[in-house]
Picture (cartoon, rainbow, N blue to C red):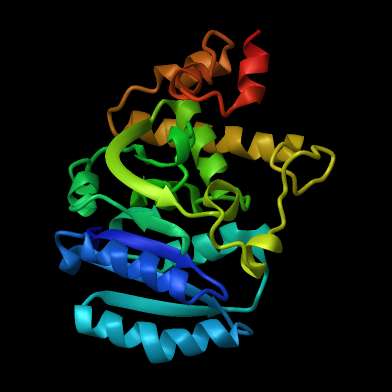
Length: 273
């Protein structure tokens, strides 16, 4: 089945106005082909500020730009279930690539959309350059087939970590030449608002069933690696890396460690010692 667009931007947002405009309009202005882009916004039903701003300020700007957009409303479920917003937005997309975007992200690369579509037909998790080149894909870009095979994109709010770990395990992670500033409070000092302060972080307590490192969560990721590896093999791609990982003949984090040029993933470094 062919998709209507080349890239779908998936953007849940809450309570932000100026930052959202700067992020989104800047992103769209630096695209080379707006006609190939689909925008999907997620807004909470109780976010009166955000909804009013969208209707009165942002929507007219998007209309003037001629971009295709859909604004979906959600019963508020919070940052701890961010993946559910992303999954639902993705389900309503029709594009070759799904691009997770944030309202505190600032695109710096003209023609970023062309840099992505150069890889159309490849099954890769694409990563941009951002905050010290973290070895995860902080703003993940995945082919629509990822969603079609698994039925969702992430089962955890840490969507970047979820997808990146799977991508390393099946050897489909790739950095591309797109530069993005992550204008987050702990990185730049900006956007230290209630949206940031009220984030529910589910990492660091593996006894919590909702924690990223709970054994069941880890098992879910391994099962998804199996499904995606099978798909790759069916498409004529090599799946030997994952087979070696499963047979304990390959360190799944070998390339992650190489990409961790600024030592941001200490837990993997410790495992390697």
